[in-house]
Length: 300
Ligand code: HEC
Ligand code: HEC
Ligand code: HEC
Ligand code: HEC
Ligand code: HEC
Image (cartoon, rainbow, N blue to C red; front, side, top):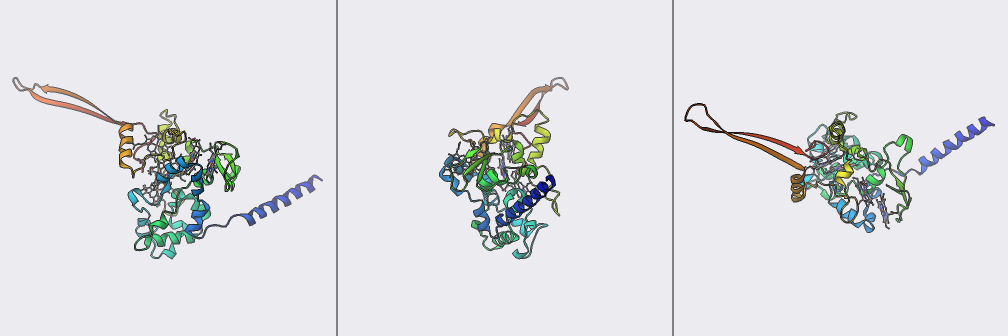
């Protein structure tokens, strides 16, 4: 009897996983399809303040560079991942997707990489198309909300992950679930890097800031999370989704730097009395630059 029940469980388990595979959403074949899968424009209606901050943030323009610098251009034209024709592009020729567009690694076909390469190689470049690829609300509040997928499973469709469980007043995402990592540094660490990315056939290194946080700030007695420093509640009462610095806003970046980088100068003026009646003025200047960030700056 017990054996029979065991076999029945196996059969049932088999059939559910088959059913899941059949129902599993198809991967995106175009940039528009991928953008639609993670489209977060609907969140604006109810989360206006957060949306307005996010729109100005670097997360909303992960391929546009600082001051519209189109940072993927050298990848296709002048790097180890260089291609002659856009048709040669694959997800692998854009290792940058790992952190700049993580949803592509799980949800895009190679044809998305080809379309992106074509947009970058066109003359003039199709910037509007590249700009559609963003780290949207759903990339953080769904795709990257679960780290231990082997045990905790993949994020579920129709759910936004945050700090609580319950019904969510949204037609597309009617449920809220708790993400255990959302308020932890490791959440940001998924993309903010520890060192060279050795899993690629040609390792690349970009952001390494999470490594600095873990290996220098924490052992030095630092106690704050990334969120506590970067997402403190604004006067409207919500976690700040601008996640400054915004390097395109020079004034605000300079103000943040003035507040968080300190220069102390100690001077000692004296006269060097080497010989009678000669008074050579001398000065010793000691300078020390310190900062309040939870990691080295600048990063990368
Ligand atoms: C029709 C209005 C509405 C829409 C649309 C909507 N939300 Fe919400 N959302 C709310 C309300 C109201 C709450 C607060 C629920 C509560 O506290 O019980 C909430 C809560 C949340 C939370 C949980 C916050 C926490 O404290 O942990 C997250 C995350 C969230 N929304 C993300 C999103 C995202 C992402 C979208 C777009 C895909 C979205 N919401 C669309 C109304 C909406
Ligand atoms: C390990 C994750 C990771 C990988 C892989 C990665 N990046 Fe980055 N990159 C980041 C993060 C996070 C930032 C922003 C934070 C920072 O600079 O510390 C960033 C910032 C940048 C910047 C500076 C900001 C800007 O928009 O001008 C450039 C340029 C850049 N990346 C290009 C690339 C390119 C090109 C690739 C692929 C060859 C790549 N990155 C791969 C995580 C990564
Ligand atoms: C899905 C990956 C991802 C996650 C998760 C993520 N970031 Fe980023 N972040 C990036 C990328 C990529 C950039 C660079 C975008 C660009 O090219 O300008 C960036 C830019 C930034 C910047 C602007 C400075 C810069 O160099 O561009 C700050 C500050 C930042 N992130 C902080 C955080 C914090 C704090 C968290 C956690 C609450 C977080 N990020 C979570 C990928 C991510
Ligand atoms: C880079 C990742 C990232 C992106 C992009 C992002 N969020 Fe968040 N969000 C977070 C994190 C982390 C927290 C928790 C912050 C905390 O509690 O300190 C959070 C908190 C929230 C909360 C709860 C806020 C509060 O203070 O009660 C809501 C609601 C929310 N996000 C909605 C959104 C919406 C809507 C968007 C898109 C416009 C968005 N988020 C984009 C990472 C992100
Ligand atoms: C103790 C507060 C604190 C903590 C903790 C902290 N940061 Fe920062 N971070 C700052 C300050 C302050 C700056 C701005 C420095 C400046 O003026 O350029 C900064 C700058 C940055 C930048 C821009 C880097 C650059 O190249 O200029 C990124 C990206 C960033 N932080 C991400 C993170 C992430 C991710 C974490 C967690 C792993 C984190 N921070 C933890 C305070 C903090």
